[in-house]
Image (tube, rainbow, N blue to C red; front, side, top):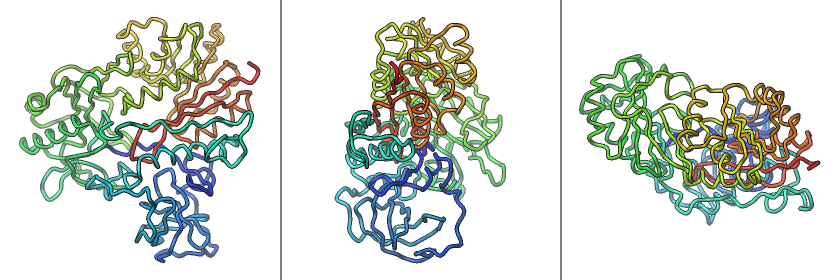
Length: 507
């Protein structure tokens, strides 16, 4: 029941990692929005062609070549020879659906999920896990080289290794890459008069009814199954976007990996939740570990599952969890990494690249609820965090108090405005850490980092394409990219996170 998180971009190369010309969605041009050309193509829509698959795109499709033309084929793997039916054409590439695997990859698996072919949550359950890790490393290396124009050492680089070449480490994977998600958001609907809930089908808003998700925690799976059963028992109607009738839009479940605590959020289309108190009491009685049942009202704004209005129906307004030795309070609206096991690996790499001795001043330019800031504060002299969302800043301040951390300061505002103000007050950063959204850093923030000239920059990225674009700006501003550590935060999906260590050239 885990939904696609929307992260990741596309890249292009003549190798295992491949993607759209021009950097795709993460770049300045290209991608799905590119206009079709009137020039003749070597393939036609509706034609079935034989393709040699040479790589994996950033959304998990096989990148095939047919008659010298690039096709993105969902379900195809590198090294395979396939038959595929062309479904769409752009200027320099097209899309095709897999018809038949003529020569299969040795890394091909039978997906264990019964709804894998329909669901849009995972893209790589048909690819062996070690092969996934290798492909994700190559995607990062290729993006740095092709988009960032950086020299990359080792596998996946076309340029020779040497002094100044960026080291891209092997992707950090999981010993057990299943059942890792501590948060799931399940859309609810009606089908043939009955309430259903599960996943959105790939590329659509059609709900695939399911009671089991192999990448969600078992506790979250069980909680959703119970909530759906109680809703049916009480006759709580699902919201119908076509008619505007009904109530329940989504069920959101958050679980504490270390604590076992669970929060259930019932998201409705309007302020009324039928039999709300009885609904909440039954949930609390039936689900072990439940500490919070909340009601959220959403207007269905694009890209947002929950709205700003939340009230507690039963229990507390938050649950607790820990990553490493840092505890966090998690509310209905709190951002919290969904894979706590890999988050420790991610933040461990960030700490390594920060090179803290206890004497440094650190700025966390996208601090959120303080997750990275508080890790850094344990080993730094002072940490300053800035975040645009005031509610997140309040969460960060509460999390600092929860951990007895008094050397972290948080401020709400735009990083590109707050950082210069701090500099005017005499605050000089030895290390600046950025963990931006998928679109990458604001251009003004990159200019500010260059102007502040910290000794080191640590960039935590969820999109290799925009990461590489931003690294080029910082490199041109006097920094050198030293090392990259890919981390597999989302096994069986096409997404890859990466931590970058940079140094100022004149240090």
